[in-house]
Image (cartoon, rainbow over all chains, first blue to last red; front, side, top):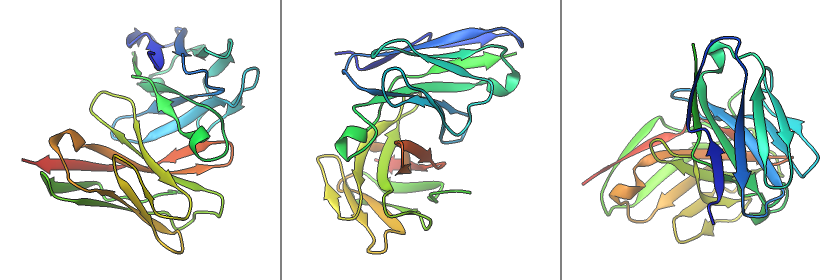
Length: 116
Length: 109
């Protein structure tokens, strides 16, 4: 049981390049999330998917797109990377989005992205 | 508009209790209070959560003020493995988490 996995672990891009960050969970969770964490800051929500087939914007969605490929996988795409998107990106999942224990989020190890 | 306010850093001696405070004066009636911790170069890890009543689990206790405008995470006996950044988070509708900047806990041997 690997929990939440993310690929790649590290990535360096040039301004204007595109890339997709991959996330997968094996806990049969319904909901998945993408966050970014800038140095010395807490995490900020980019997008989330409450259930398969749905996605919603979070606090900082500009410059990103997401795809909920199936129940297990949720990808984050940067179409034209900018230096301001240099950050650590975390994926998380939860059983659901309401109630008590169902809403507890489990996080992956993160992807460190540098945009030059 | 910060939803939670925590001290930037705290220190504790090993094997002593630690009380980590959090203010959330704008909390609404349906917002849950979650605590997560983050070890260096890792993703956040769930610690505990609650709504109104105090909560205990194997990792910690959560004491919630009667007016819900503040809460305290209690680690009963700090160990070196508890050194981390502790985040007090409000979970609002749609399961959106609002992280603050957290408290960096140093445990002194």
